Amino acid sequence: MTPLPVAANPYQDLYIYYLSGRFRPGRDFKPDHYIGNWEEGDFSFLFFTRPNMAMVEATVAGLADLELLDHYHMTYSQWQGGDIVPDRIGRFTISPPWFAVDENDTDTTIILDPGVVFGTGTHPTTRDCLEALELAFADRTIRSALDLGTGTGLLALAAARLGCPKILATDLTLLAAQTARRNVRLNGLADRILVAQGDAEKFMDFTSDLVVSNIHYDVMKNLIHTTGFLKKKRFILSGLMRSEAARIESGLTDLPVKIVRRWDQDGIWHTFYGESY
Image (cartoon, rainbow, N blue to C red):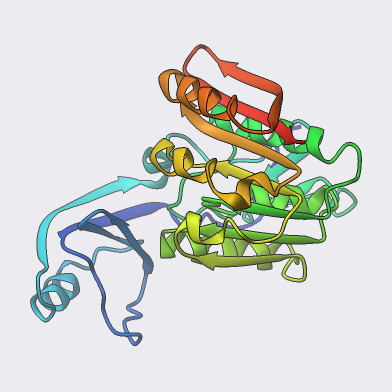
């Protein structure tokens, strides 16, 4: 049976304002219909669910080193690359909050409101990470986990659903961290998952049995050479394209670790699951 929505998707239309510079307004900046700000290098993207050009122009004019470069209007489906509907991935059902969920299936259901952050489970690396998590938790020895580059918080939420009682989820981007925190609350898992915003390398010394890193290669190549990485019993490394995966695998051969399983999606995306010894 096709699931039916029980509420309206709050993100029917997106109005995006593209700025040169880092958008850092005061804490009282809470305009109507504002979703948040995504920073990409020295550029910022403001997201609204209603047009708000006049307010954006006035705000930019009042802040130094900012320039409005362009603006866009698109549907939410266009932004996310398709409709956000319940999806079954392995043992998990991932559902946006505007669809009904089976109240008797809470152990394997993850309510996920991605907002404008990517990470709904549709990407091949996310699916492989979910499968790797099931392998990691099969022997019940994982009592703590570190999720670097958490995005929407999906992998941290999956680890909690698999029984992990202590998880630290981090993301460099404030909007991603805010989105992950909202999803932790939606799933009632605030007692298990702490979300922090900051550089992944600064969190590698967090004591955990498992580290999950679905993150840019430029960050991962440094992570695997930290002391904190070698203190983890298990690791899941993903988000790697073919040449990047080859370099990470080469780096791992010099370390006291072994790759237990690897995933190769059409020769493009690669994921490693391994353990230290």
